[in-house]
Image 1: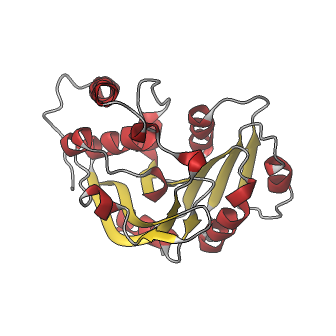
Image 2: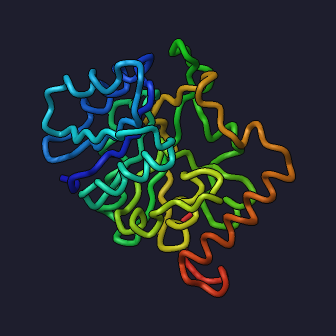
Image 3: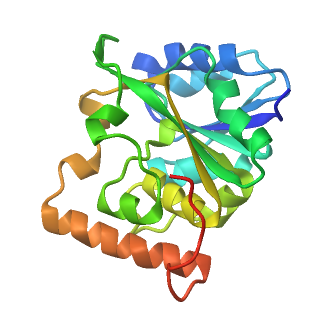
Length: 247
């Protein structure tokens, strides 16, 4: 049996999809697992609904003012207590087997620092748009240099070893995306395990368009330059010529 896991989720005005997502996550979790949810001062009733849940696995924290998604996610990650931490968005849907599949590599490989699965892509109504998110990225590659060239890490498809989470906090303001940041750190500290089967339905809709899809080429180059030095600084490395990756 795999070790207990934590799930970290930040919520802000999530009711359009939150009920379905919470149900899909809680179906997967074991009694010894925990789901840490930070509500970022929602105004749509999300917090009241979360407070109504009667489940001892749910650890609910509420911001007294809006902090933004990055700070809220940091708070959720900081509150996680298990040795394996799964990242979770408020509007996706977990598929059967996700929890065990992402936890297993950490039990089997002591050098595993991050596990990543594929995902189906769905629209706001739940219609499947693609059977493989990673196929649209040209396949998964999780090494440091390949990630700098093209990010293939998707936070909601990731599980991290807790020491990598601790290393990554706080998330630097110049990091373009938390998934890319944690993926780079994890690839620098151990082995990357990729699971080609989709274990998530990744919902793409107007409210969750990634900043990278709107950015100009100069902006994306600047992000990667900043990320390179942020990772190097956090690791205390003088160069990025060392380290072990599994992808």
